[in-house]
Image (cartoon, rainbow, N blue to C red; front, side, top):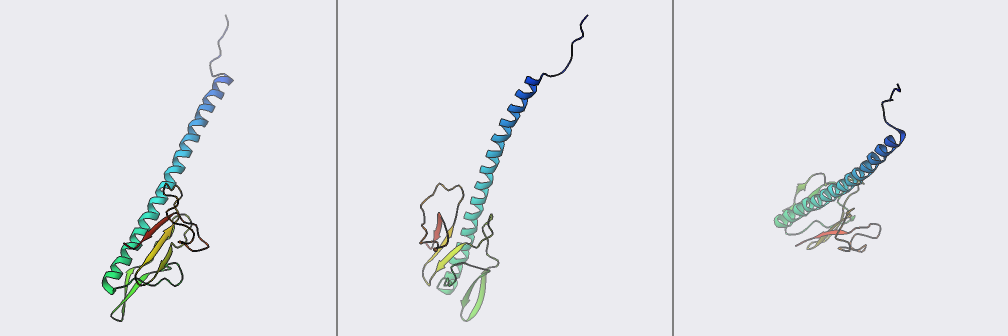
Length: 143
């Protein structure tokens, strides 16, 4: 009487490993897309938070802060009747690079720019809008 060996053949193991590798590749791609989308949502929320602070500053003081260095480094501060008032402490930074968002402003207008990784809004702003050394594809301006 012949004894039958129990277990998997080499072909069965290779097929199972191939299927698992394909599923892992699909899951990894989906995960990366979700992370890009989350960072883009964060960028949009950051720019809206800065925009909101700038609008409150203009409402109270009558003008936007003038952008002298093309970026907002630390805080959004406006002078009201000779007294400085902080509207946003510690301005947000880009979630992947930790760079400051681009800001250009004068008394009556401003531009905030950022770069979205998975943008469907290509061409919304050009390099002239964001300074010569930056690439951007998402822009927020004064209303």
